[in-house]
Amino acid sequence: MKIEDNLRSIQPIIFNQLQKTIKKKQLTHAYLFEGDSGTGKKNMALWIAASLFCENLVDGLPCQECATCVRVLKQVHPDVIEIAPDGLSIKVEQVRQLKAEFSKSGVEGQQKVFIIEDAEKMTVGAANSLLKFLEEPNGKAIAFLLTTAKQRLLPTILSRCQLIHFRNLSKKRLLDELEKKQLDSSHSALLVQLTNSLETALLMSQDEWFNEAAKIGFKWFAQTIAKKDESFIFIQTDIMPHFKERNQHLLAIDLVLLAYRDVLKIHYEAIDILAYPQYREQIEKMAKQSSGKELSQSIETILQSRKKLESNVNAQGVFEQLTLILTKD
Figure 1: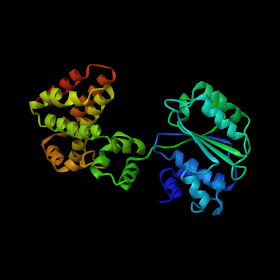
Figure 2 (figure 1 turned 135 degrees about the vertical axis):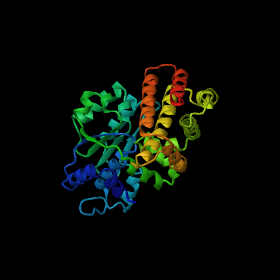
Figure 3 (figure 1 turned 180 degrees about the horizontal axis):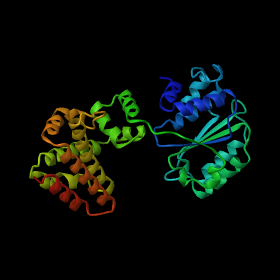
């Protein structure tokens, strides 16, 4: 799939807006693309860059096939310069080097494009250094700042860029994208319930710890909904040894919550995307054996337990109390 087709699919409103801007040659000197990772910010910046260098524009838009377009999209064009955090931050020296490039003519023409990834990670010194370009733009240079947290940028930076918000992918769209990456459908179904970021979902899918966590989480759920006594001991033998940090404790709760929601969806025949489709037959049996009221109460109890974890209440105590309530006859 061409990058244009992908962008048109995942960000149709933004794509149409920028397409018109490109055709009218009305691009501004600085853009701030804001949104979660995996929503197309980087590809949009590269596509616009390709439109500025393309040798064979098609109706004013990049052909995506000429040698120049290919180099831009593969991120090897000398006049499309990218910077990203060096360690935990973008340092002032990185921005100074970027500014030095502002003053030079392009290697293959006058045009230059600058892409700054994770712009919110600029140090205050780096951000202030960038302001000069933003205040006194060079007509042949365009900057794209990409961020997942615009609130962490200096107000002076925000005021000098055109802000464009990239919407999160829908669960259905994210599921489609993950399946294109040849992820197992059962993994994809769970991942889209836990994140709306394609990048994060892909990283989670490759994480052995997470894949084991998903199995443990479902096993804990299966024991509690069946009201088995060993579910209490399971917390000490399996849950606590695997889920050790605060964010992992929250994930453990979320994995159980999603399983209960799957049962409730099937109980009321309101099925969209199940988190655990590989266990559907087992979940259907549970749905027949449970009342809607009981399932709703269980979900409410799990949500209350999650709030306790968010308030830094001892995780093992929360898990044990939750298990006692869920397994109570």
